[in-house]
Image 1 (tube, each protein chain N blue to C red):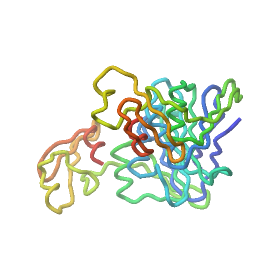
Image 2 (image 1 turned 90 degrees about the horizontal axis):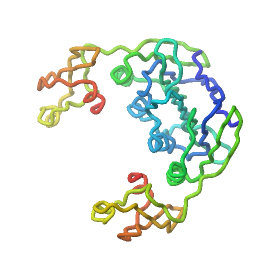
Image 3 (image 1 turned 135 degrees about the vertical axis):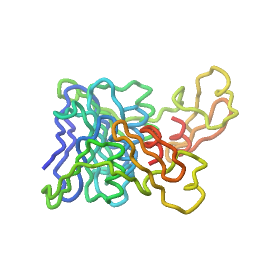
Image 4 (image 1 turned 180 degrees about the horizontal axis):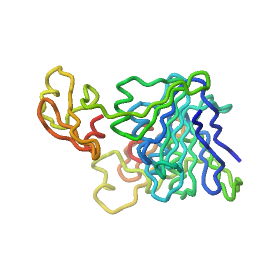
Length: 152
Length: 152
């Protein structure tokens, strides 16, 4: 039968423990749908997990994440763990963490917010992690999960 | 190291030989991003292929495709082959085919087309397969690949 060959990757990143159904959003924010660098990407949706019941997994060949990318993933998938693979070995493993202050990676949902008109880096304070809620430093608009995901 | 376990599926569908970069669109048109039935879904992007150089693969546990779904896949991924798995065996394998006439699965890109105002099933004639081009039976608007993908 045609099996999906999922060999170990030599260099790259495995993002594990993504809440089931959020893996596609991770692919989207990391812009992995169409790779030009030749690396393979694997997305597993709704696979069994001891911790979470069901989970999604994203595996990216030849790519390492920037701090900004890790922070974006934290907002989408706060339970995620990141495994960095070099020479077929996990050389680093960490849980993502939603920072107290989010700078530059999120747009404000308020169309009148000054961040849309002036050249300033957006800045939000995390006022709740579960459920996720942030407040804009500039216009004080609060945003909840759905709005946050739409503005990443 | 954390491997993606991709065990053989007992029942389901493997869509192979999807052009590299089109797998996400297949996930989208089959609405596989968030499954409620408990089956797992695997998307492999940009994996090596003898036939295509690079390809995408979609593997869906516990789901079989309707004719309409197969026709949609043909429009997105004309090179795709569909493998139907039952009891761990491939019981059927076929190449998707773009039909001569496409009924009901595509919206017309012309906002003034009668199909947006009257209760009629859309109907398009395939006038070219490569590059893909179709013509609306009602308003004669021609649509090319990008517009077709946006209106599936």
